Image 1 (cartoon, rainbow, N blue to C red):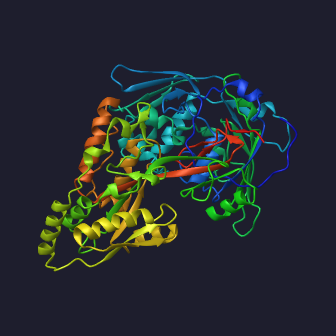
Image 2 (cartoon, helix red, strand yellow):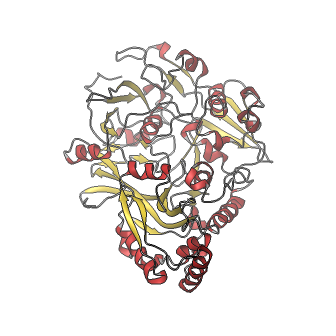
Image 3 (tube, rainbow, N blue to C red):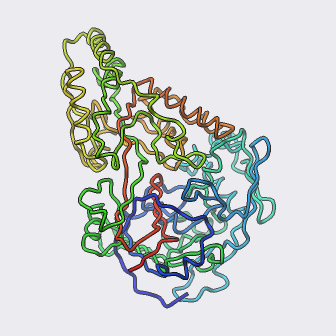
Length: 551
């Protein structure tokens, strides 16, 4: 390691989905300009945990992504490629996955505050570390938010419901460098699941040694990825909170380049504080849902549509719990009223799964056009409204306001649709802009009639999107507890999965409890001398491994 550098607490919490090389990098890039930089970054909040099998907030996801690496990963085109696996094979019946591990991936634990890596600070990552990680996910005592994603592994259902033990999970090591995972039925999205941070390895001996503090401080974590945590300081009542990472040189080789030397995160209390650091030129990039005011000639601005914004209805509301009222609103939503000049930020949504979701290396929305779900019909909408008035024994429908998270979307887009509802149905549907905190509180407390809900999966998969309808209370009531993701986890092929996704979308849309209106972009705004900062719009993680700075 090089001489220790002064810690800088600056800002960046990037939102972008850039092209990403495979786990093996090009060493020519490393030797060329742009490498060796100390990246100044920021986390909007203190990470809740650096435990990959448990953490699910964006700040944690960013640090985890820079600390760990997994067996496989997605490249910039959405194809699944090897990372810590040298290769893998799948049985003819699609139920057995065998991964052969690279023998040059190491755990590193920074024991000393010096610049030398001691021999006892690193040791190989082996197959048993992946077995232990999967067992932890499915252990009901752990309450991992990712257990639902891995219910395709053999015996997982018995373990989760308490009738089996984690030792019976269909994942086992054959020696140090061969991992076998058995599924109860074929799962076309299983490899995609294995690219997620929740499938990163966990060393059992080290985990036990932390005595319940795994992932909670800088002495209770190890790294097998591009960087390790040298210092993590957070005082909720103080300032100058930091999380400082250095290049993990033991995992760098001819096939795996780590370009920056340091990543130094400041820990902020809000997105606005991150923005202010960028404005003061103390940060190299920042993330936002709204990009207005930043000139694309002066900044590198990249966006990706990973969110579907749709109307949901309070099932306790007398008027808007009525199925005919909901359907009338859906049929009268003139998405063509959305002006074309807004297309980089939003686009009309007729389906549920957003365009950033990939399958077979392509956008799912390229494989399945959502125009098949277009139900715009003002005449039918008026007839349904008349029918609903009779059912509800009312002469008119009183005005109502849609609650909107103002941090997610500019409500002027919704005003365009509001006018179409008034013209077609004679119902005034206004908009109530709220802060994110107030929006979430109102949803939780049921203080709304209609809400514009931002739907996003917790990883890049249609299964993750559908899982939201199984786990989020206000969405579960919208679709009458359909167990949306269960049959998708047991789909034998990607081609069949395309059909099942489409069928599942239609089944949800036919209930008119979730009415998609917009696909929405989120953004990274970076200084023009930065390249290849990789954002995962689904987990919220920002990956700096191949990031370059040319200043």
